[in-house]
Image 1: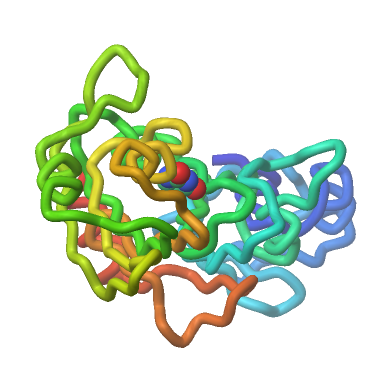
Image 2: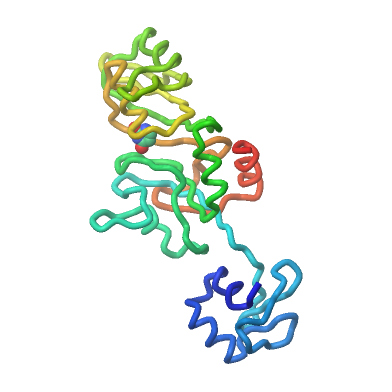
Length: 238
Ligand code: URA
């Protein structure tokens, strides 16, 4: 690959800034300053340094974001703050959120620039499980649980696929449950709860496939996935 593309993928500046740096001799390949931006490098074998600092080539980046309420799941929006606004200092070109959480939903959001993995995780036929912590008003009956577990009519062409329900607590007119679904329809959890006579008051995504929200990650923060998290996630979308 061209040296300027290598450096651009590493987010060392705009293409013209990078060319300028190369021409100034700030970049070395295998210990030798290279002044031509179209010099070819082997990203796996060559050792590239920028101002003396060694660069390991990476073009795909994977982050776990703890989405807070109040930001929209979009790369940009004219009116509302976005999840990507929380990640302006993250490395990686063209990052985007995988799937969508509502503005008032919190929890796990995967952010990457790996379109292929994102596509596989979201493909309906893969049935990747998403687990939500759900606080609701209303009463969840045994019949309600059975309906959610077998699939409900939320007004779409097809009923929802069977979900897993774990009732966490219940008072006279409110309940908390964990709900695992394998689809990603618009407002799906909220609409499913409506069909059993409840209303969601708080929603948080806990996991997506094998990837679980890090309990130590503060709301609004992000961190790169570990190697194991990424390997596991890849294999659950295979
Ligand atoms: N289901 C919803 O209703 N909202 C979300 O944000 C995610 C799933």
